[in-house]
Image 1 (cartoon, rainbow, N blue to C red):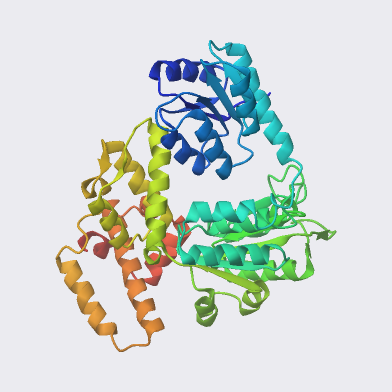
Image 2: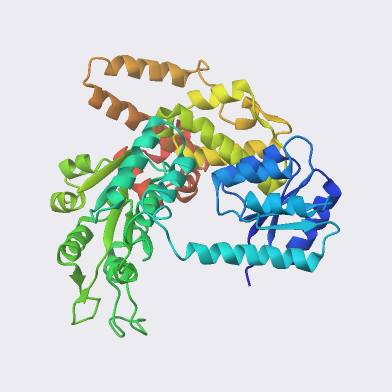
Length: 472
């Protein structure tokens, strides 16, 4: 029995929506409501509902037009039409347009719930038999672009992901924290011949060096105190699928050597084991650091880098993708409206200008957090005051200092100038986060949406002292 699906109720009569909302919630679904076709279509475009129950007669866009336009976005979306104007002609027309069913009012509650469950089960069964358009670069790559934005940079990322997905190449995905590296990795996996297998993510920065071997390679019963049973590691769990090593730049050098050996030999020993375990998997790694620079600095294994870098995808920060900022903000606004049952219409022109000129050091994650808070406190439109970003371009000592820094880097090679400016912005973000959290590094890491180990390494890298945390 299908339960927990997100069912979008579309009806201009609020009383009907309330009755259906209670019925579906009681039946184990997650009901959502839209009072007009345009709002419903936007939610469908973003992939919010798993099925739609729509009235036929509504002002503006009626149920039949909504059905036709919904099918353009998702031909498999179950769509049930309800109407007080019964008739065989209407039912036939609806079924021809792709409706799953056509139910006359007054509704039989049990029949409606049964039809919804059947529609979800039918869709789920259909998905178990993939077609060429369901795998490869079709649906997953299109979904990746929908999630990330319409910019030329995203189109390039999507094209590269589609290209490499067909191969068994190891892939490095590089980009700042919060740019969507795991999203790209999942699109590659789901578009690949290994899509039927699992994708196992591993946060390299969260594994202590002493536990790295047992975490990745598993251990035999009795290998150490507390090893009560044989436990497979992440390599074994990713058999016939993809192993995704996130923030691999945080991995200690000693662990990198063990990883390189396992990759080269496609086999390893569990901790305490005597027989090698052979694996067949694809490796995708991600880093918020420039691994080339890390190799030059001696903090990342040159041999491991060469082994991993069969194909590299670079994700630019959102501050360099203005189109995507607006796309993402609108997507998060709609989702938050649904979550909070609000009707915030959008962003004022000044708010849009503020967002496109702001630096977004936290990238997509920060946009999501800022927009969710803005929708919470806004009424009709989100204005700059709701964004809590401060005044863009306002004169301040910090801005004066930044202007002076810009003057200092003029004349340097572009790459060096960008690296120096980026490092200074990163340092200021760290100091600001530490100030806001009273010097608590764990809270500051959560605020910046980075892992604790990265926080510590950055503090050490930029030589940020406790007195500097409080004074700057």
